[in-house]
Amino acid sequence: MKNSGFLLLAVLFIGISGCVTEKLPPISSYKLFPDLDEIHPLLIAEQKPANILMLGRIHSMHAFNGTDILYTDAQYGQNSYAYSRWSDSPTTMLLLIFQEALEKSGRYMAVVPYSSQSKSDLLLESTLFDFSHHINDDGTSDGILRMRFDLIDNQTKRVIATWDFVSSVPATQLNAQGAAAALNKAVSILTLDLIEWLR
Image (tube, rainbow, N blue to C red; front, side, top):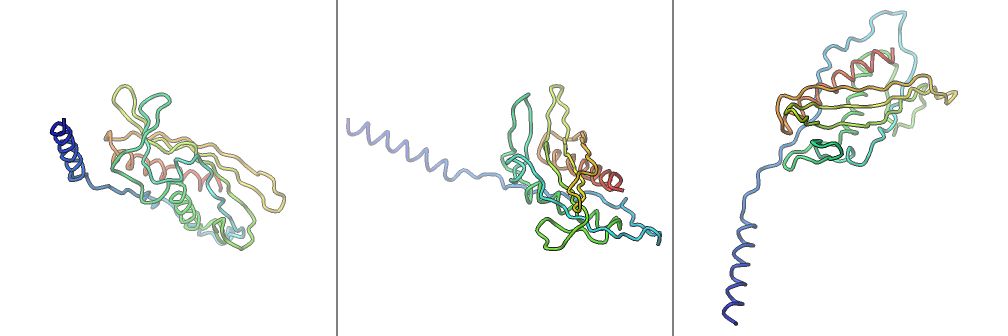
């Protein structure tokens, strides 16, 4: 009886040590780096910008405030790629991209984040509904980006305009790298369309 207990314990230790020494693949980190070369600042003197735009915090469900790269392969299922991450949360990266792009557009005297102490003429609030890799039944997949924007007059506190955006960009690979490439393209499309909408 003692020998069988010792043997069981030895097998257990060998199994645990095998798990500990198993080499895990390195974690890949991806960032949002959309192509914004098509943004051309205003050059006409009569259109010199006068307004200051403040970007509000991007509202979203908790999953988009983390660094997981999410994928959906079932109607109600949502998972994350095990060894791949965003370099920062989608909400943080998107806010920085929007700020850089809107400043580059030359349509505002300044574009400031929600943490700024400065006064602003306009406030752009946004909600992120989807930012994930959708795998379809036929083996294809898409990077899906869905957001809603509300432009608010800070003097009157009234909503001037509302815009719902959805972009579906085909992914070339059924993995995190394919998801990152498709979502980068979707962000490029959204950012250029956002500048045009705000114009």
